[in-house]
Image (cartoon, rainbow, N blue to C red):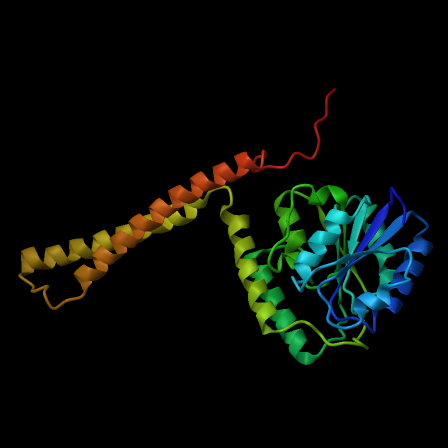
Length: 312
């Protein structure tokens, strides 16, 4: 391992005893071919098999061991914080990503991109996993509107500066390019290889899909309303209140001018309910707006990102 590596390769591992040795060999071979200083970081996410034992003797290698299983996003975050390279490359530990494609990501970064995502344009997954992935990609394009085809591909490369103010939670690792794009970083994409799994079992299931969907909604909110939550909640509250007042005005008109009996009608209750919900949403929007300002102040940053300052 180099003290000042050009590139850090970060790989999360969870019960991948049959893959780690071959994976390390392929990463080492790919990095040596590139010919620049590098480091390899494996993050064991609380494996219950012999993954850690099979990492013994592998060199160069930095191995981070979790006390228990915290998830892939936490593994990536720990690896990023340990990494010292100018470029941080992430990939899965199941040998479905090909380390030989790292050079393609680096070539794209040299074109001026801050982030380069891999696109598994010829997937080697099961039909059910393909359906899950394509559904997620469709929702992502609707809600997040990023410019990449395959957010689920873990093979990505980032400039180190991308992670200066970022912590990862939940299942957010899939949406790092989208988060960075919101901050003004340039995002590119290259087609990469994808191989069928030969050892171990997939860790992807409906629970991870649900967590990913919730995180997607979170990013949708940050993309649309992170700088103006009052516009979302306050605007919705005003609409609800207007509808409620309209219903009550209609009921009052029927009572006063047409002598209608309102005791057996539900509409007055609906009108009052909508007004109360509207007031609550508006107040919630004000509180969210205050909390957001406090958040940025505590982080000692603002809701914008300066690329550079040029003095002539």
